[in-house]
Image (cartoon, rainbow, N blue to C red; front, side, top):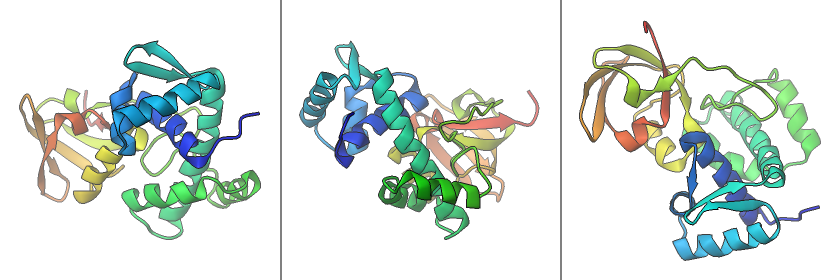
Length: 216
């Protein structure tokens, strides 16, 4: 049995989210997401590796072991159910729900289960990411793959990474919002939201926004 501090769990869930969003996990991405130094991140990863919770894939890359993933999924499940509660019951926005769910993800399993039941057993969080335990099928592409002039609807904000939610919350880009790609450059995607507002989205952000196109 692994008894981990909330901080150590944060590292496991961060690896889970980055892998969900980008497919691979670099140490520098973990450090950036958790707002700590590369050296601090490396030390914590060494401790988690000794507990067989993470593994080095390459020198600068890591992944979760099966046990590490099980722990991360348990916390992520609670977190995403808590997010739905905070949005649907208290009316918090995407960024607020993600922030405060960190405090609720350590509640007892029984209480989280009752909250999940009360909400009608949602299968995804407010950001469109699946709640562990459910298989959700998506017919989506990254915003960076959308052609100029195409209409689409935001379906998922990958991994709920902080750099993404801070940007999307600022411009009210959320699941269900319609967008049209106005123009594309090597560094950004200009979109028009369904209320007529144009936003310049950096490609590093746009690649984390999954959309469903009207016609493909």
